[in-house]
Length: 114
Ligand SMILES: [Zn+2]
Image (cartoon, rainbow, N blue to C red; front, top):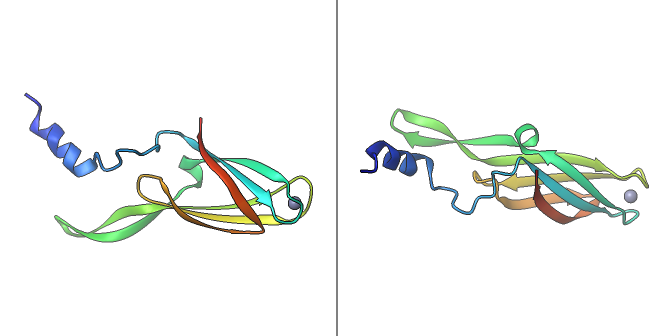
């Protein structure tokens, strides 16, 4: 019979991220420079670049910190000009992109990368 522990693990840990693509170790981000139009591709290691964001939630032992999402801050410089592109991305706990802010350019594409 399926272990109770397994079931509990599922409840506690999820199944929370059913369509998560969080298994890829990196993101490939493409931005376009506002100044010269150059498209710049940059690879970001999730393990290094993602900053964990916490929020306090009521748990068994009172308030406990829980990961509420991830923040990525990246400054990107192209080869053709000196315009610095500043990108901030917000992800949910399943590392799905929620929203982003960008200065000095525009976001073209974000995809998973090995
Ligand atoms: Zn440029």
